[in-house]
Image (cartoon, rainbow over all chains, first blue to last red; front, side, top):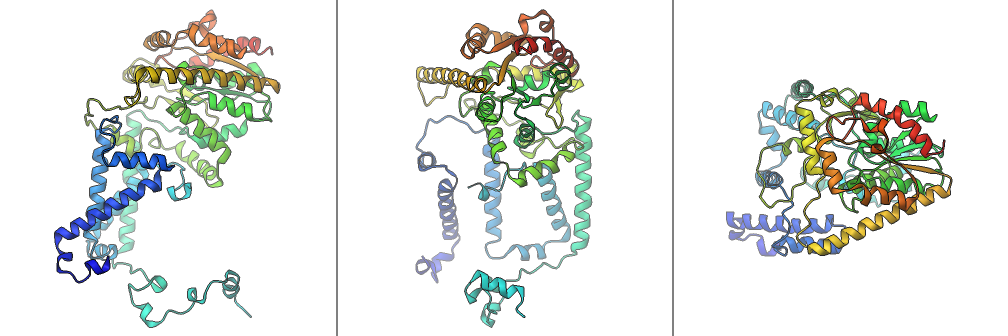
Length: 126
Length: 385
């Protein structure tokens, strides 16, 4: 892979970077299915659905859930994009203190409002 | 003398690589993680921390005051850990209450203790199926006490995988697998939940608040009906009491009444399976449940345990719906016949039949005390006490 991309002029263009980002995201989404599904049958069913295998399946998601997923996913991709050539420490150093204060307070309030129950973190549930 | 760190290293038998001093090339910032020091951004952290703490305290206090102003009060959340703490109190000869939210709201532990001589353990759960709890007690070889089982047909025969079964099974599973951390978390949460009104795990969480956004759904979307808002409190013994605002006519009362109707209406069959096939599978699942309940009752009775099924009051539009959808002859009579256990159907007794459920499904806190008092002679007769 490195040989394919390294020192190539086209590798640094916006189109290539967008395409590469999308390919990485798609690969991670496919890998997540196996990570989360309880067995291969369920994983296969889920993957088939992701590639249009259930065109007449029941609509079990609310519009609010779909919007929420789209917003969170879009936000995460945006953050990754901005931090592609820098890191969080640099971004925090450059931000004015009131922005850091507001972000920190917002996150703390969101944690309080989320009211986590006593479920263990997903990595500890295997 | 060797240091304890050296002993530790030797015992671990890790390669020298883990403990050697990194050469200059590895010490460069951003190099391998052997010597990665995370730079701390230059910011007035003390001031930022104080400001964040003040903002969070102010926001949490404002949210608490707002929640109280619109009728919320502090109460415990009913979750698997609280249920587990009650399950742990059940001794071999205890009296336990299982079933749905009617057993939870309508039966007063003080009155039952006075009348039956023992303080019952409250194991009923809102929107839960009785069977997993009954099976758990039947499989508990030490248990040979008395079970008072509230029966609501739609919950009692809820098929595997449905929310009522999931809820009950999760609680039973937690009681067998609870970790020390989960137990400690419950003990830490209780004093907080007893004093803070906005800690409502099924109503005032961020996700629940987002659900209230008025975003229209697709016309064919299969969206589960909403569950009732806060209308009762719960104490450490899991005794539920209806709040006054719901017991008197008003907006909350009529809202809860109208929420029961879709919740007690069967959902449409799924589209991926033919209707006839689905009806056949549901019929088989219900038959299986009757069979399983009868087997669990027999197991319990074979060890000297006792069980009485109780049908607790309902009223208004919900009673009309339940009587129409789940007629007594087809269900209640079958439970009693199959299990050969005692049953108390509130409508059969004039002293129990006159109660009105303000929100159609549960008795008010005051009425639950009087109802329990009147129920005792019937329980004693049914249990031959």
